[in-house]
Length: 284
Ligand SMILES: C[S@@+](CC[C@H](N)C(=O)[O-])C[C@H]1O[C@@H](n2cnc3c(N)ncnc32)[C@H](O)[C@@H]1O
Image 1 (cartoon, helix red, strand yellow):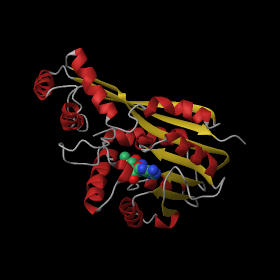
Image 2 (cartoon, helix red, strand yellow):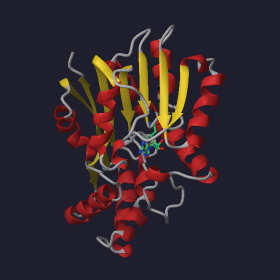
Image 3 (tube, protein in one colour):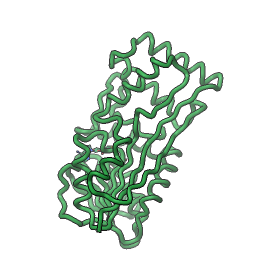
């Protein structure tokens, strides 16, 4: 499963986006399992390498990971700032951060990790404290995302870097399917997030926050065979979301799904989704 299947729920009948207020041990365990599965898919590991190479955290730097969750990327950030750098992981979920801390301990990286409970819209740090502020798959769950970027810019030192990585769900392409039906399916998937189109707005938000040297790395995931990292499974799990939206009837959705399965069997299936990694610099 390459790019974030953003629901925390494993129940396909519950289409709610609940990352914004994750609570309770069961929700935390489900969310942690899903994040692990997604972020460890081969295409996501390749994507992480691309955007972290663009950000280029180096030895000795202090990185803030905003909305770090279970720390899947936090640990890689720590590895990249070794031997004398450090990472601070902030998240509202104590349960997710506890998993991050245990994982860091298991790898012997915990001395370089600080965890803080907090809200990205009101970061509990002094101005200019970090070399880098990083945020991965968080902004589509937070209202308003501009506040997060403004706060990230505040806590980074002059000359320091910010990076946000977000999927734009409207970039999803699928074949087969009736043109209007597929449009409805895409729309239902976009509208289940607080902002499913966040990817396309990152550059503008970075510029409005006064950041310079803003660059974009588009990362496109493609599945032509129906077997690329579980994408077909993600699509199937979205059928209740689509029906729940009222845009597509249950019968239409089931009919479409049969067409998808037939296309996979024939070898003429196509799926793609784009995420955008945006990096910028705080002026000196
Ligand atoms: C899809 S997960 C991504 C986690 C992690 N960045 C990763 O890529 O593995 C979304 C994360 O955003 C966090 N989150 C939700 N609302 C937040 C807020 N207001 N401030 C900071 N983090 C938030 C959630 O707790 C969760 O850890």
